[in-house]
Length: 124
Image (cartoon, rainbow, N blue to C red):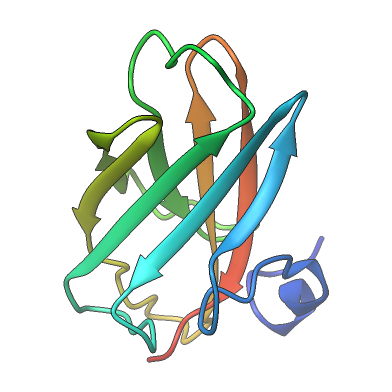
């Protein structure tokens, strides 16, 4: 089994340090952005999720569960609020893992649609 450190570097699918990341669930694109950049642990961050390709908003806002691949970090949920049509925003903090590992994942469930995961590097 891989530990949540450098072995997970190959799983990174999101360069959110430099740009928003996009993934697809069915016909819907989910775009995640985190600001301010660079994204650092233990700082207040703004998380933005934009949905495109959907004509009706989801039954309830998406949310973000933050964690580390292969490691239980406890609950770190970012609650999202609508700020525009199919555009959601929430505030949160990525904590610093005592192990020093910096690979994090943001799981984005979109109620009644599905979920996706963005895996990215954080600065400590």
